[in-house]
Image (cartoon, rainbow, N blue to C red; front, side, top):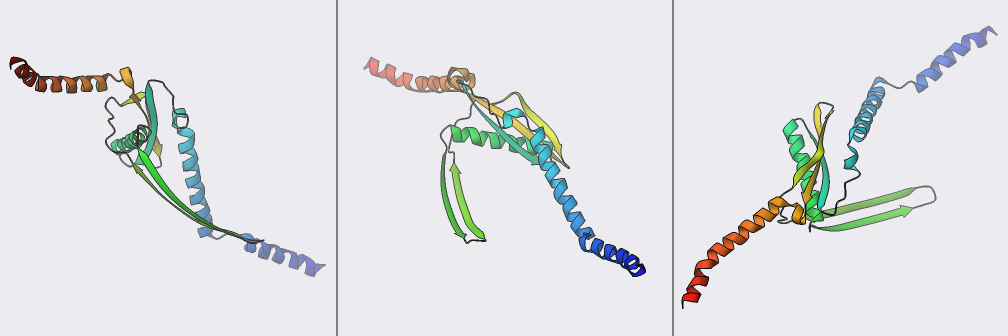
Length: 187
């Protein structure tokens, strides 16, 4: 009985040592959990319009996000992200090549895949694009700024700036052609 009482604590200590994680493993787990919480926070703090883009018959909306250690750079990159999405919806092109190889046995599956994607958006006129009402949100992400931006490009008659730009272009063509037209009449 005494041997059993003496042996039991030793077995318990050895068993505990077998399941105790070292300080580096605990540090690694803590870092992974911190990163997971940071990502969850970014998702939780994202405005609704990041995932549910508004739809309109007279405008095109796009949302963008980015992070930076500089407030202005975070905002600039988020806007550039959103502008790129508007550009693609206004006639940009994309080409994609995907290769997938899969091997499967009774016990193990293996997959090798690669994807190459090229997008191109040449000379799409973004005249009149603006940040939507309540379309900016900035949050802290660790020691960085995370910017969310919703931009809108009015279309047709709703885009006053583009209409003014087109009218100015027509006025310029008219002023340039008028002297020649009058010369033809005088002949």
